[in-house]
Length: 599
Image 1 (cartoon, rainbow, N blue to C red):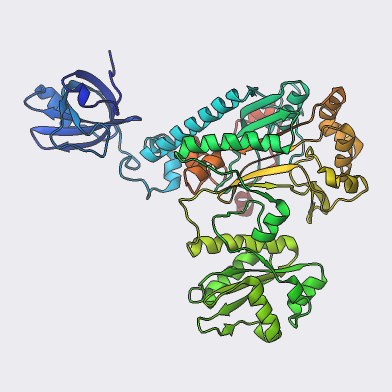
Image 2: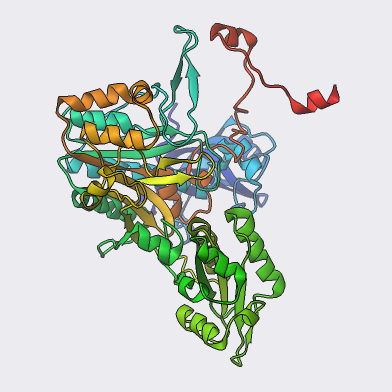
């Protein structure tokens, strides 16, 4: 049996008079007695099929009148010019008068309608019936765009001399920032593989192996809290290059980003991506991935606050903290006491701020603020001048440790941008953020950790200070690509000197024995002639999400997990048989809290 001679987005006026065979899903039906119209759909589009009592046999007409939406059918008929043309679809000038009809599969009662339900579907229902959700034009388009994106990447990388190399999914557990997903090894009882958080070690080993230019569309796994732009299991473009410096990697990857962007959006980027040091990004925007489509930059008030009469500010400065502010433009009437309270609660809950101060500038020039009485007229005037606030604006101020101030004001800045509609959602702005610190101090664990990862090379200007024992403010040869406030990719030039690598491990608190246990095979490889090298990795899912203007990464992943890490469709993760655990020499220590309480 021939199922189709054409897809359902293919027929045009040039096909009029031809006999065709079509197959697909019933999108909609309209029965007018002597005429039954069926919009037949596949991934390429829709074609209107007409069942006319004067053309088709009686049994065909009767079957057509009983068709249910989303049933799969095959029709044979003749292409004719459409009387009432629909110029909104490519096939809108023709229709097919059917003479044969076979129902290949009937559809049961649908959990939701496929057509005409673009924006009001419950996400959990969509994820439970993802195979139906993907039939919707928007989701099908997102998956098509994912395919086009990956093809554009592969073509670009091949054209620029990169080799696609697979790396293992089952590997050794190494400390890389997030929890590993562990896989027990049956034939070596008591031992575990770890699923890769990234192919970092292997891609550097490939440089030592002489591959020179490597890339991979890699599956990666991180056991960390999920959010709108993060999943346990994600897809990463991994890249590594030998005999390069920062500029070489950035230029190559910028060309890739422009090529992929044009493929997905149809727009071109005709500018060199701006480069902003990490310290400047934090100081101006409170974020290492700033959205530069709007202003509302942070302003430093530390020098003004250090001698003021407001003890809360003064004590922060004396303790080594900072005082910074942002301005909500023309928000004086919108930011009621209730709204300001919500902003303060937001800063406290999510960023650990102790409080938030504000200054309102009314349209008549008057000032209202709970802290105004603690400042002289000159000090208040200095605050207004420093923040460049105008009549009708509201100044929001946070005083705390630098990390808290940047986090709180950076988050509030984005909140203001969205709520006051300061962001042009049709605009795309690329940015490089460079020179990240090598080390960051973890307050909970009271130790230093690597800001990126421990294989990141230190800037030549800071090497002497590092070798002399300094840990704070040591900068690295790092570069993150940011698009509209999202980090879509990041990388670095790597350490290729084994002595420097050992010193970094030591500064991170890894003893020689621990470093050998975790990274011995990796460090040993550097003894055999490691070239200078560097690379980068893109989060493909997040990158595509931003380009398609979606609000969640789940919209661009065919079969994603929920925020609880569950696949509602397959019901994973699930409980396994005890015999499976026995084969792996495992026993669960988990006890259900509700059952314990019942006892």
